[in-house]
Structure formats: structure tokens, C-alpha cells
Amino acid sequence: MEFPCSDCCSISELVLKAASLIPISHYLLGIWIISFICCYNFLEIHIISDFFNGFRGNPVSLTFNSSSQIYQNVVSKCSILHGRYLVTPWLASPHLQTSFLNFLGRPPKFTYKRQLFLTPDSGTIAFDWLMPSEVTRSFSHRSNAISKEDTTPIVVVIPGLMSDSDSPYIKHLAFDIARSGWNVVVSNHRGLGGVSLTSDWFYNAGWTEDVRVVVDYLHREYPKAPLFAVGTSIGANVLVKYLGEEGDNTHLAGAAAICSPWDLLVCDRFINRRLVQRFYGRAITIGLQIYARTHKSIYSRLVDWEGIQKSRSVRDFDKNATCILGKYETADTYYRNCSSAGYVKNVAVPLLCISALDDPVCTREAIPWDECRANKNIVLATTPHGGHLAFFEGITAHCLW
Image (cartoon, rainbow, N blue to C red; front, side, top):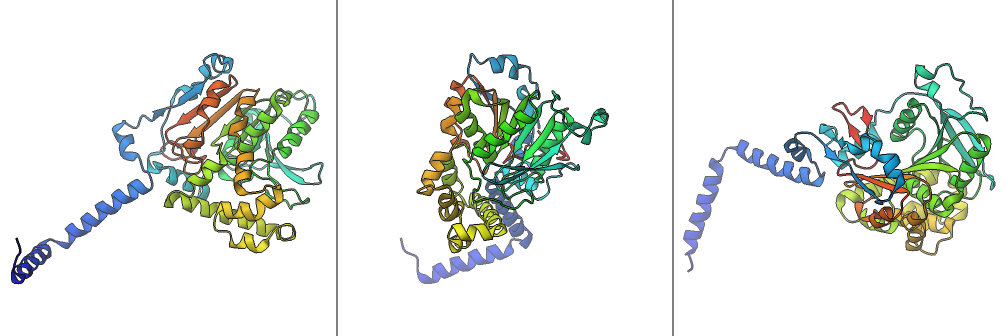
């Protein structure tokens, strides 16, 4: 049935007239509601589900081998891993948590003790030490120097990509370990921590040689002190790969891998999948370019400097710099060879792996669930929320779970 043109005009006029009778405040309210829903979904906010859950948090999910002695003797007695994790309510989003950590973070205040370590290839690594005496009065009677006879455990912290000992999450981690009575040493990556590059070797996501020489050195210097290691993000990937390469030959008594990317190829695709993930990819790329500019005298001599400047993604940077420096044929070759997931089966020391399932950088799709379950030395702990290395808790977000 067709309406005459005059009838169509009158209908349009009636619609417009009816629309004009609706108060502007109602339109504004509608726009606000639509914007809120879009923002809520875009930022993956979960405060409403937390509310209906009574703000009780979510239980930690543990994946382990049924005959694991590590679980039976250690993890089963750890109340934190058998408790619940509740995100700080006003940071109920993986993106809010991750951004807050990087821009504010509220790190504890203390001063490291700096030591410069020279590698066999003339590279320089900055060690930043933190002793229990620096963070609590309970250990004030102890000396800041560690003797060869000292039996206090030492924890080596391996930061993530472009992070160093001053990164908020590293300071939180180092402070909590030292407060528990253990000595902490942050092993900064080459060219970070305010130290210049002194050789043509660069660190990357699979460069395990620095971890190897650091662990061997600490074992020689402090033979009676049990050695442990904690890796974060890319540092976790490097640590797990090192453990898989070494097997029983490592001097480490145990380790923890926090928010590891596991499979670099999967994470590369993930970080370019959605608009919000692309923000992280762009931020990481800018960080890598700043690192390259800091050491331009070496980079410009070894790689295509113009290619680095034009890089718009992590893959671009890896193609123009990392692959050339590390002698990888392609970016995919680099990602496959340096992913730690393939080394999980060979880990021969107790290893606790912690990942947030809403991590906006290291996707849950890359977690090697079956490999972790098959290895009796590994316990994988996952939480529904936590962001990337954040895990803020408490109403004031002053501490990290």
C-alpha cells in the first residue's frame, strides 16, 4: 500500500513535532546511558558483577599434576592461593588496573644498593639490591652487606619489557619480598636502569644468556644462600625458557612466572585484534623506540635506523631491529623460537605461574594449560581479574595481591 506524498510529509512533521516535545534532559540521559554501556563494555568493567557477587572476589583456580609433590607439600598449605581475589572496586577493569599501575602505581619508597655487573661479552647489567634491613626495623641489626656465609635466600627479579627496578610493580614486588626477610636483587636488562649499552648484544624476549650468567655469578658469590627467581611479563617468558633449557642444571631452588606471554606469536596477533589492544601495542612500540633512541649510536650502526623510526607496531620494530640483532630470519621465526611454552615440559625445579585471565596484553589463549598440568614441578594459578601485572586489592589500592 502506498501513501500519498502529502500524507508522508504530514507523518514526518508529526514525528518531528513529537520529538520536539521530549525534554532535552531525556535525550541527554539517553546519550549518557548509551555512552556508559559502550564504555562499560569497551573497558571490560565488571563492578556490576562484583556487586551481585557481594564483593567477595573470585577463587584462585589452580592447575597442577595430580601427583605433584610441590602442590602437596607447599601450595596446599598456602592460604593466599586457596583464598579469593577481589579487585579494588574503583579499578574493576583490566584496563583501569593496568593503566593505574603504570601511571601512578603508588610504589613504596626505599633506596636500592646499586652494583654493576660485567658479562663475558663486555655487556653491563645493573643489579639493584634491597635488603630486609632497608624496609623493616625487625632486621635493623643486620648488615647491608651479604657475606659468603649468609644463608638468607636471595630472589632475583627479572623485569618485563622496557621495565626496570624503578617500575612501580617491581618496587612493590621487591619491597614485599624484602619485608618477608629475603634479600632481593633486581637484574635490570641491558641498557635499562640508567646504564649505557657497552656491547653489541641486546636483550630480547628469548635472550636467556644474561639470566644464566647472573644465576651462576650469584651462586659463586653466595654459595650457601638458596637462590630463587621471579620473572614478570617478558621477564617471565625469559625465565621459563631458561628453566626449560637448563633442566636439572640450574642453581635456582625455585621460581615464579607472573603474567608471562607464553606464546609470542599468539600474543602478537591478540594485541592487534581489537582497538583497545592496539593502544597497548602502540604504547609498547613507542617505549621500544625511546629505548632505541637512548642507544642510537649502537642501533644506527647495526640496523636500519629509518625503519625503527617508521615502526608503528611491535612487529614492525621486531622486524626492523630485534630480528636483525638476534639474527632471526622473520618476526614469526623470532616469536616461535623465543616462546617459553615449548620449554615448560623440561622445567625441573618448583615453578609457580600466575596469570590473570583478563590480562589485556598477555592473552589467556597463550597459556599452556596441558603442559603445566603434565609437569609435576609446576603449579599454575589463574584469577578471572587482575589486568597485566596489576592485581590491586583493598579499597585504597595501596597493595598488590
